[in-house]
Length: 180
Image (cartoon, rainbow, N blue to C red):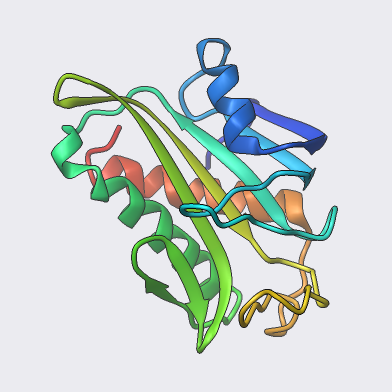
């Protein structure tokens, strides 16, 4: 079991990834920046991540002890996406990975992943892994295409224990894939 004494919980941030990047020097390897709400959550490209405050898992994981070359950076996205799929499976939700970094249930998006790397030569110096998992939100803005949540799929749960469970899965995958 992983002991999570390095979770920094915030009521509200503009973005967990932005906070992690701005404080990278002060954060340890496998630190988790978590927020109950984000005012400027980001997705791939110009997309934003919208979330009802206190209803979803909004985190960024800091990887500093990355042991893979930049050419193998997909190992990180695979590890996190597969960890989300495994987590959902443990709640009876059958999910799949929609490349590059989304997790879907059927034809509905349940999770977005945003990964930022800092490179030093051909090596990854650090990575920040943002995960937005729809957990207990049941009403979404009309302009979002096909969202769903764990609750809508029949699995309402508490956010903090879910984070611990996710980090146990993710940490194990990182070790087995040689990321850390």
